Every structure is written in structure tokens, then in C-alpha cells.
Image (tube, rainbow, N blue to C red):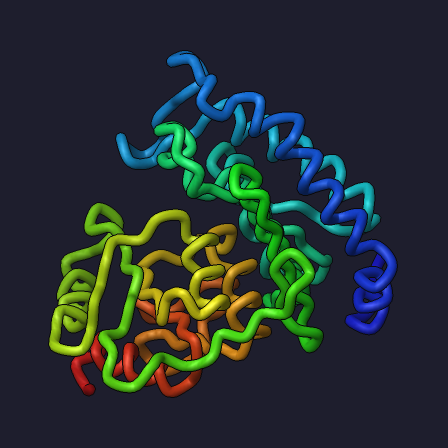
Amino acid sequence: MIEDTETIDEFLARRSADVEEAVREAAEAEIMPRFRQLAAHEIDQKSGPHDLVTDADRRAELYLTKALAALLPGSVVVGEEAVHADPATYDAIRGDAPVWIVDPVDGTRQFVHGEDGFCTLVALVRHGVPLASWTYAPARGQLATAVRGRGAFLDGERLHAGAPAPGRDLRIATSHPDYTTDEQKRALLGLWTEGVAPRACGSAGLEYLAVARGESDATAFSWEAAWDHAAGLLLVEEAGGAHLTLSGEPFRVTGGNSLPFTAARDAATARRVRGLLSGTA
């Protein structure tokens, strides 16, 4: 079993390409053959009509669970669908073992509708700290990766989030109202102001990639599920961005955050968005 962060760094130096291969193979074997080919019996609802799961989600997660655990003996896998089946599985994120956090199809609604805005998210986390991440959008042929302290990359090109252009409205992707409490709705209303252009978010993983690329300025999300955030938050950080919760602290993948929270292209923008959310701007 991995004993310390230095050894994990060595693992990443040796096996990152193998993780990338596993992510690509899972998509090739289980996701893309079902893209725009789903039958009605391959689609189910979880908590409601906006919370969908398909055979592609389930089978890709099983594929990745087996492959990732084999790559790093002693690690555990926390996947969205496994947690839905057994919520206690989520507790492994707070344990001592290295954890692979997996969202097999982030943006299932888009996937079901035949749109290309979905991705597979994998993050390697230890003691609540994301150490590496993979964001793969197979229908777009894009793979973004990040390793803590080593930068973020899209298809081999280094990502620099930069800063918003002065005088231009901030482009911010926000939570869908169906996933917010009344209190969170009031906080998010702070974004509907001069100088801000909020819009409903799509796939969380692709929204984080847009921030890391400088195509979007920030996110404002109201839920904590680690499989939606761990990979993207590291990607944004390594591209030069920052993230803050409503309390002014960075987001913790282990939970207990003050919501909503933001991830932004730079620290100044993160502070500005947090101020708008908290009513202190």
C-alpha cells in the first residue's frame, strides 16, 4: 500500500499514462458505443427527472473501478453510482487510503440528449487533497490532466486561466435551481447584477475546464458531491485559478463546506464572486 505522498508522486510519474489509457478505454468500450444509441430501458431516474443514470454510467464505472484499483494496490474507488447504491461508500474519501474519485459520465443529461457536452472525471485524492485529475470529453476528443504542483494541460498544451478582461461582464456558470435550497437561491441571486453574466451550468467537469482555459470566468455551485468537483478544482488550481466557499475558505472535497462556492480564473475574481454570493461585495 502507498505510504506517503512522495510515493504517490512516484506512482504518478510512472503510471499516469496508464491511468489515461484506462479512462480512454472505459469511454471507448462502455460510453461511446451507447452515445446517441441509448434505448429507453437503458435510462433510469435517480432522485428525479433531472438526475439520470444510464447503462453507460454503470458499466464505465465498473470498468474504471477494476482498472484503477489494479493500477494502485491499496487504493479504493469512490464512484457516483456505487455511492448511490451504498451511501456509506462515500466515507472512504475521509480515510487514510488513496482514493480514486470517479464520475463515469458527468453530464448524463447531455449524454442522454445526444449532445457532446459530457465527460469522464477521475481524481486521485489522499487525506482530502486532490493530487491528480483526468477530465476526458470523448465526443470532443479532449483530455485535460493536472498533477498538483506540476500544472494543468489540455491535450498536452499547458493551461493558463489568466484573468478576466477589465470592463467585461463576468461569465459565470451557476447551479440549476432544482439543486438549490431557498437560502442558496438567495445567495445566487447576488450574481444577477451589473457587470455579471450568469448562466445555467452544463457538465460540471467541462465548466471547470472552461475556467481553466479562460473561456469562462467562474463557476458558482451549490452542491458538494466530490465526483463532480475534485478533478475540476485541481485543474483550475493548477491553471492558476482559485476557489472559495461562502465562508471564504477553499472548498474541501471531504465536505462540510459553506455553500454556494466558486472556482474562478484568478484569486481576485474568486473573491469578487464570493462577495456577490455573500452580499458583501
